[in-house]
Length: 425
Image 1 (cartoon, helix red, strand yellow):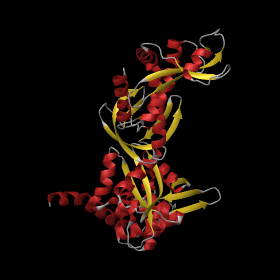
Image 2 (cartoon, rainbow, N blue to C red):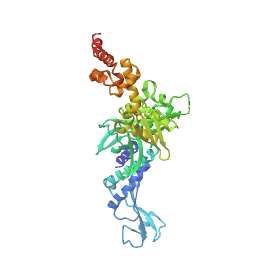
Image 3 (cartoon, rainbow, N blue to C red):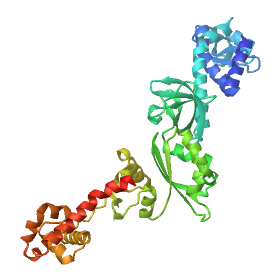
Image 4 (cartoon, rainbow, N blue to C red):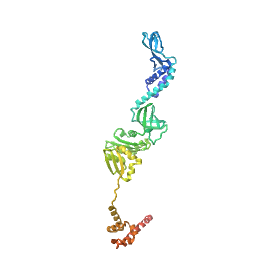
């Protein structure tokens, strides 16, 4: 039994990283219940284990009496003085009560309790070690699945990647190696739990600290981050050093630094923008390549109306509003992105344009073109269709009706012939 017990102590000490004193204390407590079964309801029962030899002994505290009524609680004065020569009636004497074969009995009875105590000590060690590692990135192997949660083997410990902290677009297989962010160490119903995350925005921030030296040493500061896990992340960077380009440093030579991070994120898009204390400049940087035309700010409610060119509206909003949503999170302002209204031409502007175009087309004076437009003739085709009789009905144009009709017919003929000449060339 002694050799087996010592082997168990060495296993827990070596494999689980627990001190021998911790294991011995757990075993000692577990063996008390076993001793109570083997010895009986002895008074003040305790067990003692020799850490070197593994010998297990049971002791009870008995009251010295003249006549023993209960052997579990009392000892005769004669027997007491054999243990303690100066014992008197009423004294308390500790007596060894180890029964024969107690080692085997204790091992059987204490096995389950021992495992529970050791697990409790092991989990306490997990809490002590990992509570200072919250915010770190760790690497582990997928061991198993518990419903939608993933159990990650970190080596000596197991950690939990809950469903809520997974990236929706990622699928994991047993044996896959993952890097995760230590989000919390919590005391759950079954003891301390290491909670991991791959969807937390701080995971991306930590990857940049590991990949980009300037971020790690504080030369470049990540001012804000917004993430739609699995799809897109926006990162705002800034530096006090005018010689350092914060965006270029994070991207790296030929984009190598950001490519390494994107690869770790399974091709999630990462937009790196320059932070600015000027909110309109910051929003402009965050919406690039969209170029806002105007801003209307409600500073009290941190709300902003952004006007963009109509052809860039869908790009500014993004698929399912993603770009606008991430920009709002990044800047901390609620953005209302709208298309810039196109000014409508008045009647006078449209009339003047029609007169100029017709005068140029027919080679006539603006006054003649004005009369034609006023009578609904705004193009050469419309003059040809109207005919000479219609033109003669206009008093100011009756003398030049034939000339105007021929000019319009020439224009129409040139237009008809132009495509054929171009094709043949």
